[in-house]
Length: 304
View 1 (cartoon, rainbow, N blue to C red):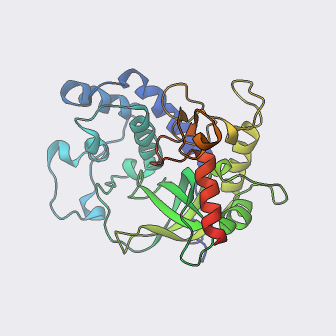
View 2: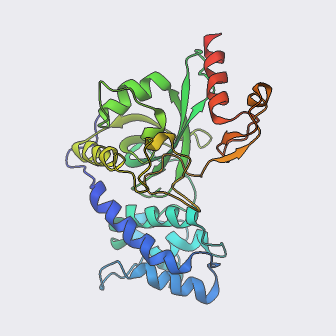
């Protein structure tokens, strides 16, 4: 079931807005968003919107349970208020940048973003793949990948969620539909930062997921552009991006990174048996096994 006729999304325009907002936030990195700093930050975020934008909540359209008054009726303030009192880290700036860029048209029209997840009817949303890791095998025993998605449209803009999916389906069907080569070996990390459109299901708040996917021309164009950009390493390394230890967030980050955090070296319980002192670990994954050994163990689990 494809999205309704006339439904469309421009990833190019959205990405440009995201980059503008990220540039605006640069001077606030490391600051705590409270009191005067938060007010300046809010004013800074308004600069990228048309001068005549009122940001006034359309109460007839959104029908909130309690009608807010004064500053609380400012939809941009409502979208940024969950970050009040928090330090603006690289990761948080990335999240805010996409949240505002993805909801640009909604905010102009006076729509409020949902501060928490609610049960709503399934609806189509643009998505960005933030992370792809080897996951525990499915109940059928088939190998799986765990994908982290960010919602890039609608009232849940900025929401992130995880979903475990068949590895074969992701690499041999979904990736090809998204614009990756059909007759080339593909590593799952290459899907990081790619875009797609999915039917978001929030009826079960413990299991938010996408039940269907859709890959319009705009998705394919964006993902092919991403793939071409990764062929020209910003640091002139000779190895492919998915073999690089640099992440796309934090210190020594790379915009072409295929995982969020830079890999770190420490002792792997498995590699240590063969005399290897240190191996590469993803700091976001809690494991005594390095990246290579963990993936190998999951393959063995599947073989059983």
